[in-house]
Image 1 (cartoon, helix red, strand yellow):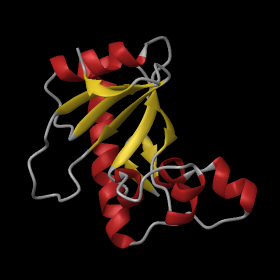
Image 2 (image 1 turned 180 degrees about the horizontal axis):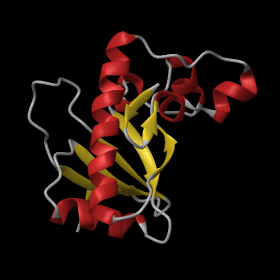
Image 3 (image 1 turned 90 degrees about the horizontal axis):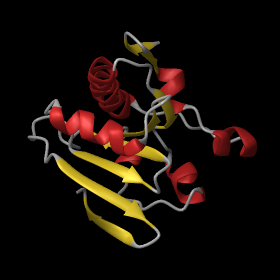
Length: 144
């Protein structure tokens, strides 16, 4: 099932952790609607950077989320977030491009200089916060 022209439900729910443990990582209807909004934002990222966007992780069931050590409040639990990589671009460059393009992200985070986390608001009726951060071994701080 396609959620957006370049992103499928299978891609947005793929999980090595779930596969390795035989766990179900199937989203419900509300989570699929959120994943669709997230995939649409990823299409905007793809347009801005002019390159394919690779999804490391998007939706995570509670079981998968707990196993990877993430917070119960993670937007991944709702289908509202994706961790991405863009070939031949640093996470910092991806964030800078998204900020410059004024994309409607809720949060965008350079995580450990290895990937970019990007999300849509949890409530579709809410305005995006456009919060940009860096997270690394020193903690979280505003993107600068």
